[in-house]
Length: 151
Length: 107
Image (tube, rainbow over all chains, first blue to last red; front, side):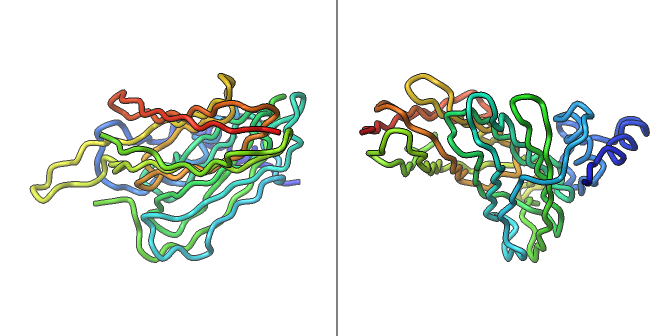
């Protein structure tokens, strides 16, 4: 089973990545390392197991300004066993964060959909957290023909 | 400044059913990365949080970043065990809260 511990360990070991500060307006591209740093914040450095997540995204996004995304995580969603949080990041946008969804057993099903902006061909990475602190992850690449992050 | 949110929520459901909720709010979701014709940065202004409660209990919420597209569309599920009211809120960077409710009858 794949985990992303080694990459996380490298990011943590090499010190802080260069983060975009508030007020920084140049549409730089975030790096995969920045996306990894966001993920490490979410997981507290804990390993995430690959699996249980399906990421519904077009293979090719004609318009990067609005790309439909749906994430679904396998889970019984009972009071004792449910997905509590789902992190979605991108590794090629000006900033990695896209959204964090918070769920409860009342959600019924661990799924969420929205429309996102993508700057370039890049990976969407999803990390899901269970109520008892386990993490699952998966990723999917989207090819973007016209970027949509502004400027 | 936000228009009335658009919702698609079933009016009726069976007890224990998992329903799908679709929400849409008109909002520019200004990323803070764009410049105007004079070259000045257009300040960030987005909806940064969405929440949904049912009969006062949290069902689903989202922390939203500028990478969510304009006119934020958020779709999720809810398990309904009793009749009641869904309450939805959207929070703007400037603190404005837009809120709306939808009733559902559960048989």
